[in-house]
Amino acid sequence: MTSTLRMEAAALHRAVSEVLHYLWDPIGVAGVPEARDEYDGYVDDVCGLLWRGADADTLVAHLVGIAEASMGLPGTQERAARAAGILLIWREVVTR
Image (tube, rainbow, N blue to C red):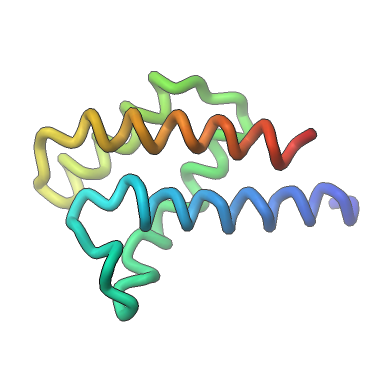
């Protein structure tokens, strides 16, 4: 992996972590400093989707699937859509 690619990957990883914690946040822990790593287990999969060129619908489906299957939380479509839009922007920023 080249140095530039490593820097892009690290930047995307940080951005995804921030978006999942502060924007997606289906369980409502964004204001709790001790819970900052609550969604870190999902970051690598979301980064993988972004690197493979996933579109908004794919990202939304993935995030809604996590919320429903792993957390038992229905009705997160709006949060997932907002997060997906920001994630796509970050992909563009990081890979310019």
